[in-house]
Length: 199
Ligand SMILES: CC(C)(COP(=O)(O)OP(=O)(O)OC[C@H]1O[C@@H](n2cnc3c(N)ncnc32)[C@H](O)[C@@H]1OP(=O)(O)O)[C@@H](O)C(=O)NCCC(=O)NCCS
Image 1: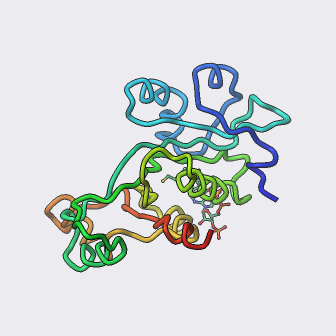
Image 2: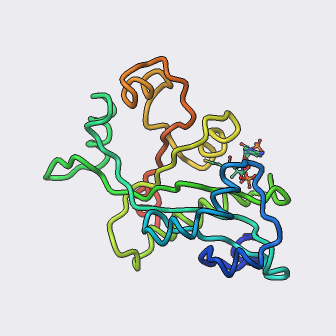
């Protein structure tokens, strides 16, 4: 049984939804602040759209919130071995500089619902949503800039995501030109073609 699909309604995170919301918190102050105070303005500026799943029996309760925006994997920002690997995944007559994807910029599950599989269900929903035939543009990868915390990275790995860089040193070097920077986030991706071929 899917809790999100069967017991919740998926909707845009609008000012109306927020004004009725019973205190949403995912336990991360920055994310909470974004969803509650910045998400609608961010959408107005076309920088990212935020959505939420609200509980059917208590519609004022947000179970999970997320933000998505268009993005791409820029292969010239990658080490040569990874660049070759990405090219081999996306075999194409024309060698592209960027491969299309969608960025899951933010994801937060209401603390009251942690550890129930809700975050994983939200990821499954997004995979299906961007694979859907009604999707207006090509979208090969689901991309996340995952908070660099063991539990968060492990959450994304369990959901099939792979780090774009093989180590923190490599990601630091290719992102900041210095391999000693302490990374707040790790770039990870999921190849949607894996699912498309199984449909
Ligand atoms: C990370 C998060 C989305 C996971 O959602 P969830 O519904 O609890 O996750 P699921 O039940 O589908 O999966 C459980 C896995 O999530 C991770 N997880 C569980 N609780 C977590 C927590 N408090 N913080 C971070 N990760 C957690 C663990 O890897 C866990 O696996 P385990 O049970 O084998 O230890 C949710 O904990 C959350 O919103 N955390 C705070 C905000 C955040 O860090 N978001 C990610 C930003 S990139």
